[in-house]
Amino acid sequence: MGGTWVDWLLVIGTGFIAFHALTYQDADGERPWVHLLFGSMALMFFFRFLLHNILGIW
Image (tube, rainbow, N blue to C red):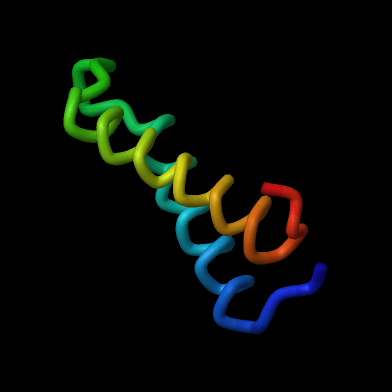
């Protein structure tokens, strides 16, 4: 448990990217598919860093 400051930085960065990409809407209120694609990839990396590198669960 714990993780280095780089692990925490990556968790914060990928979490912000995932949140922004998955909640983004353009002027018409649509969600572009590329934002959903990269947002879901960032969310997977977020959970990977959190669970494996910091919590040591997975």
